[in-house]
Image (tube, rainbow, N blue to C red; front, side):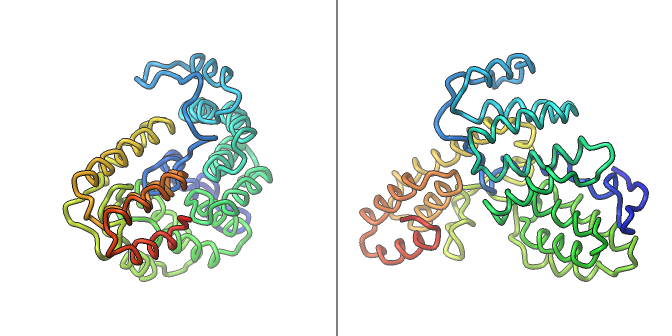
Length: 316
């Protein structure tokens, strides 16, 4: 997406800095970030997952569910993909009535409102949605991106660039939104005559080497096993074509594979740490605690190390 006219604040217009679009929609359910769970459990009326579901079928599945936000998220995702932003926003609002503590739903609503606005580049409801998202999850990349864009609109170009550069530093190498994020930083820097090249290089230099999902050895830290692998960046990018519920199914499948591996290799301490982290990422603290108990039982000599790692992940 090319740049548009300059904003009143001298920065890039909405057409210029809303570069991430569907790439940041991926962040709503992409592996490696907090994965939307809705209210938990399976929907009472799941929409088809073979790609054949129509908007009408997705709506029927959503309306048949009174306590699961996921069908409403799927409906919103479908409307968003067709550029039907008003309908997508309405579906996200319904999802949030069921799951008001889901940061990714708030940031998805905010992005939808931004893209659907014909005049205001940052509608008040969108700004409030982004703020709610970061209040619930300070790492939400989409909300962080658009809150930085708000700084640019308010003529705080240095503040916007600093926030975008922080997001870049926190983005795993190969993240689907990386190229567009860098382009945004370069664009705003050029418009405002700010040299950003060395700052981009610095932000990129300290990042993790690949975009990895729960189940990857890298998530265990320096002691990770080399024989535990997560999906490649290409595989994760392919997941972006999935609906949120399908993305979660993919994540759960990888975690199940990790559990199966640990049943065969119960002495793999870093694998247990990965499993705990994955369960916390999926919003399953009870299962994370069960993983800790199993890990300690299998590795009593490393009990203190395992409990320390678990505490750092918030496992109680």
